[in-house]
Image 1 (tube, rainbow, N blue to C red):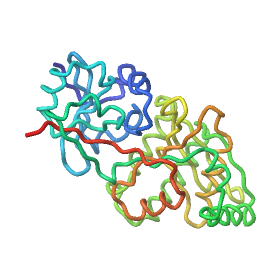
Image 2: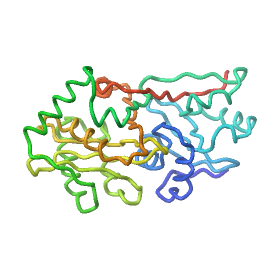
Image 3: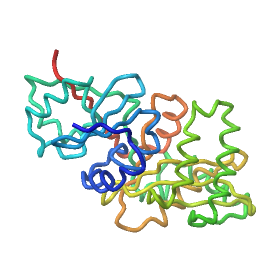
Image 4: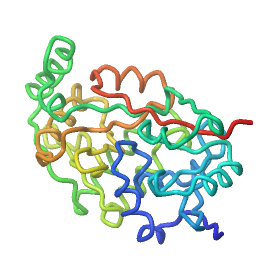
Length: 284
């Protein structure tokens, strides 16, 4: 077995493998793994199969498969599962491949991804989203607004937004996703990311950065904006949903990490699905 710290050089090994899994879980993405490699102490295990070994936010070791469970030998998987606290993130659709005699599973609400239809985010329909429509209308009415694809020529403006966002949080950088977001902008082309930058009265107001997760889902890894522009987030999500290619049916806003402000904000858009990420462990 070969064990290496996850590095940018592993992109050729992992990028297509993770995308080929075809699941809506945000962790199954090389850019996500690479950008949060320090937070999770990611290592690449090369053996009969390839796994990522990581550390969860609540301090547990786990193995992330990069091959569908149906293609992994059961006894071999058990031998590896015995070396960590659990396998993670495991889609619910994979649970039948674990027998109840040997395995048990659970999930944490804070790990669960928020999924919205592109149609919903592009229209904010119904009474439950009327506040979003009002904020969008206010932004459009209050500011001269425009949006641009986020290209390398505009990355400097995105970084200036990010710096203001970080200052407005009042938190140290190691308590936010500031550093991974800076790196996402710096390695934007290398990581095959895509996004948009949004302007209010000709001032850079906010940006989003994400990528294709599976054939019908686009995941937003980062969404940052200057607080002074009321309604800017509603404008960004609505505008971005409107210009996504028609093959994308869903937007993944990732998890809330048990953060109450994030949970309130993401729940307020009324998710269409909550994608659970199971933790599967060997019974003691």
